[in-house]
Length: 380
Ligand SMILES: Nc1ncnc2c1ncn2[C@@H]1O[C@H](COP(=O)(O)OP(=O)(O)OP(=O)(O)O)[C@@H](O)[C@H]1O
Ligand SMILES: [Mg+2]
Image (tube, rainbow, N blue to C red; front, side):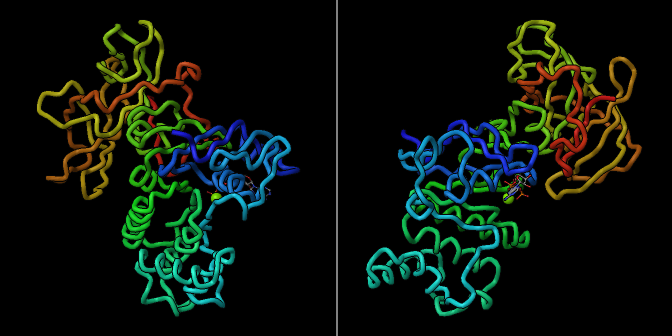
């Protein structure tokens, strides 16, 4: 299937800034696909959207929308001729226009009567018909969000770009609006690029996720691939909680030996015996049991509803202690200092593919794209 959007080797630097906001980005988005650009603040997500929409000019590379080069070489197609709808983070609704007029505003290229008809249809699809005479200040955040979406999809764009569309909503409204918006986009078969720094949103709504770090795309894949088989230390630690363990390939059956024992059938370990690797082990990889291979002591607990996230000090084979984050069943409570016995479920362990290049095993340097919320637990 031909991509609807294609970026090749796109670079953008803001002068006199010393670093590139977008650095050699190549990406394809397929028809009807929902792709999320996920990454920390300042990594270049909005700039990438603006390059696609035509609000920024790339320094290098090409941008194609709907099989047409819109930027690159000596081609330049202005934003209004690209067939791209954009929903801005702050919605950017016109405060002096009603809901209906806001949506109608973008339809000035088609006859007025037809425009009104399409506006009514889109407002109906998004459950906004009862609000069509209201002004933006008379709407809740979630309702404004839907009006912004209605305005973006009414001209039937080739693609809709949405910049952090759910960030202004409270946790409860956020999920319902998110699911509603995604349902609408899917029903209409609209190709969409979301921008988010929230990995839960990205994993929940996307067909594929592109993880960005410092202007570059580090990995593109389905949510499952990104979570289970991160290709870099950055992706492993930014997308969910993980434990990073040093080890080496033990045999050719996919076993990796670490200080916390052997992880077998580990994805991505088809490397020569003895190769030093880093393994990303999700907290779900450990199960409490009576006779597990790992023994340790609970240092801290956090109740999350679905499970208890516990930090456990593990006694390793060389008699040192390593901290691991593990998920324990929420069926009972745990106390600090309590002994715990764990077995390993290798399905949640994966060799960080690009880690061979970075060994020495240094964790990402503090402040260099390391996510604030996520905890990297390299062995002590
Ligand atoms: N117009 C501009 N002039 C100068 N620098 C800019 C401009 N726009 C963006 N930048 C810089 O480019 C980098 C990428 O910015 P961008 O807005 O794309 O990040 P982002 O990933 O969207 O971040 P956030 O999650 O905070 O919105 C940042 O360092 C930012 O300061
Ligand atoms: Mg941004």
